Image (cartoon, rainbow, N blue to C red; front, side):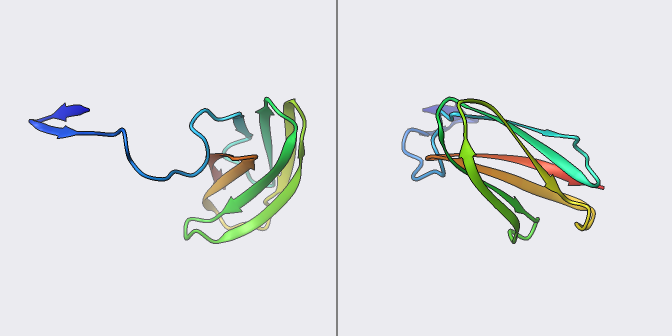
Length: 106
């Protein structure tokens, strides 16, 4: 329970969420901003199927790739040279976990 300006808010039961809070995913995008290709480096503590999804600001799926993550560091490269300039989201799903990062395309 937190109190702010005399208002008490209880965060203990905030409803469903996407993925697991104790995420097994650690993600880095480089270069960011990018023009032609973006590298997605992510670490996993388990061997599992993964899905990487590129989403535009309107929530439309632009691209999606699937694979099998190894325990440790994984690297995936996406060609983005046909994308319009703007902000996109890169979403990684690994098992029950989800990690999202923002990508700036120049």
